[in-house]
Length: 210
Image (tube, rainbow, N blue to C red; front, side, top):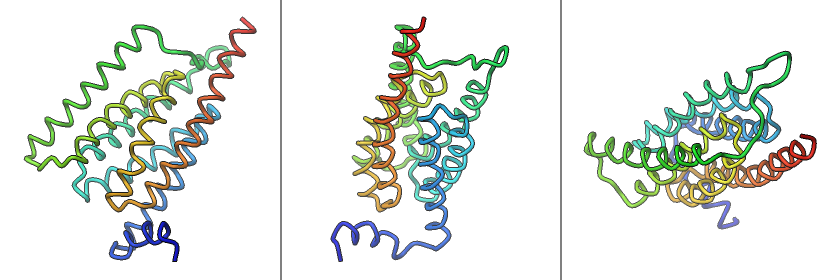
């Protein structure tokens, strides 16, 4: 068989069937969520909630606290983003795609470092051994945390952060035996690049008509 195919399949040989089914649901709903987000479709949030809630359980089961907390936060932010994207006035959507201003960039930096410190404190509180991969978790959690907040505000820079964190996550999840989720992040990266270009085009078009 193909070595790459074997690498992804071998990780599932000893897993329970229900875990594989749950991961498959996360795979499908997660990709659907990013696809809808790329189109600025509010369905990004309900489909994303399905993926994040299930992933919270899967990572908690595997003792991956950093990833688990990240997905819990995504679940909360999905509810906020769902509400924010749905706001309308006189039939027109209030939240438009824009770039971050200086204040939002500063908040993003604080969120990034704050998330890293919080995750580190949680690992210490529960007396988990912190492996090198857990430190990578903390960094990607900080990036994802900020990206999700920017997405809820429809800021273009959210896609830049998703791309960076996705590229880090692909080999990390493959290393941990989450083959399906690793492949999912390959697709996420492609969609995030497409979304960045699409949202940027939307901003450029808005500037031309203003």
